[in-house]
Structures are given as C-alpha cells and as structure tokens.
Image (cartoon, rainbow, N blue to C red):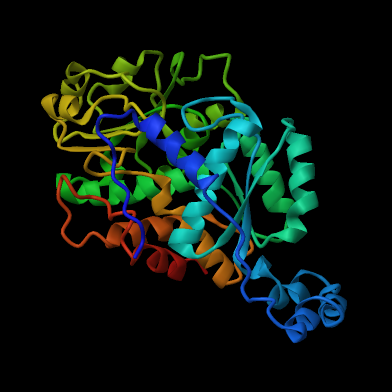
Length: 386
C-alpha cells in the first residue's frame, strides 16, 4: 500500500514540501526493467549480445523503437525562464518542477520522463539543444519557457522533428479550460458561441486558450494584458497579441474592468487579486469565473460567488472545480506514444477536451471537472489521440 501523506496544518506548506524533498532526495529515479543477476543476462543485455541490437538499431528511430525505452519515454525541457508563478528563476530553480512533471507522467500514465534543464536561453540555442538530444526520446514536453520565445521554439521543433512536441503551458492549459467550458455551458444553459469571453493574461497560456476556444466555438474574446485591453491602436503588440485581435471585432481601449463588464465568462491566466466581487457584479447573468492564477487566484471563490458568479473554478486543488493541465498532458502523451502520432494537432486538443468533459457524469456548478486521480482519465484521453 502506498504511503499516505497528510498536511501538518500547523506548519507552512512550503516548509513541509522542502522537508519531504530533502528526505526523498528528489522525486524520481531510474529503475531497471530486469535484474542483472546471472552471467547470461549480462551477456544478453550488455556485451556481447547487445552488439546485435545496436547494429540493427543503427538504421534509425523506427529500428531502435522496439529495442529501447524511446517507445515509452519523453524529455521535459525548460530553461527556467517562466517557472510557475515565480518567473525567471533559471535552470536550477526549474529542476524541482521538471522532476514533478516527470513524477506525474510516471504515476498517471506510466511514461518514463526525464527532466532536462538548459542553461541556454535564446530561441536558436534551445532549438539546437533539443534537436541534438531528440534521438534519445520518443517525445518532447516543453515547459516553463517564457513568451514570446516559447511560440517560435515550439513551432520550429514541431516542424524540424519527427516526434510529438508540445508546450504544455500553452496547450495543456487550453485543453483543460475548453473541457471546463464545455461542462460550464451545461450548468448555465448557454452556448459558448454566443458568449462574451474576457481573458486576462496574454502570455503562452492566454494565447493558446484564446486560439482553441475560438476554433471550437468562435465566441467574442477580449484579451487583456498588464497594460489593458489588447486593441488595434496599441503600438506595443507582438505578433501573437496582434493575432488575438482577430477574435474580437469590436475591441476598444480600456481597462480590465471595462473588458469584464457584461462578460459571460472570465478566464484568469495572470496574477492574484485582480478582481473584486463588485467587478463580478458587472458581468452578465449566470457568470462563469475561471480564476486560474496560482497560488493566489485573480479572485477567491467566495468573493466571486458573492458577486453573483454561477460557476467558479480555480487552478487549486483545495477548492471545487480545479482546472489544471495535469488533467490533460499525461493522457495526451500516452496516446501520442501508443498510437504513433508524430504531431499533436488542434483536432487532438479538442478531442482531449471533449473526452475530459465527458467523464463528469452529473455536471453541477460545483463539479464541472473530473478528479486528477480519476483512473478513467488517461485512458479516455489516450484513446482519442490517434
């Protein structure tokens, strides 16, 4: 039976986490699939027997695949430039997070994931390093690389490698937000295509969420960054932010408070404590509030409900309706590896979101998402990634 861990309510959770990490000396290790307990096994797994395997595998990836762990492994790659809500804390700060992703891949999807942190930071450098190590892996999960360079890095790697590549901060987040919206529509009895959506945060996650929900239903989307509404008169927009203008045909200058007025849906992918209950009162009836900043949401659930929100979700596990990309990425990569998928497409993402939403059998305002621990989750997603 697995060891049961409980929080010590009298101790800071950061201190508890550090203590546990020190005790375990990290979160992952490599375990051999067989024991070298006889001379015969040593001869077969190492020399001289492996000479035959190596000779055949030299023909390329397809030849190597049945003989190596690349049929079930991936690299989790970061330069530490955008780690959680901590920002640019570098490769050493990123390693505990990348180990955590590797642990999740193994526990939930039985994928052998290797954390790779890079002490290079330009787009060209990161692309070159990942391409150089790609023969060692069956897939690449890009993680915690800052926008806007993350967009070009992912696009180039997708085009230049023959294995699946996904920037989870973008697409894992987009998938789970779409899944939550599919079920939130059932609670509010609205159509997503008729909704006005305000998204605060125009980095990697905000751009990807906007793209996917627009592709799915074409609602009106107003995007907001730290300088206000993203609108045509702004002279400081990068190419990704300019693309967001295509999703709203009547975007005018203004603040977040202007953008949220009369909105049906608020999606927060920015920082904590941006909204008050009064702001929520200015939204349309039956408002949906996804306040996903971690660890502090843009507005706490009880405040959003005081403002009249009908459905409230956050990225945290201690509140109802957790929207977290951990619901998506293990199953997506499990399916990609199992089904020989070379590129993860928008169709795959929509199929994954639909599969996640379908696992909630009785949707209510307090249950729009399945549990991260639901054993049906990874198989349901993996089945549609083909």
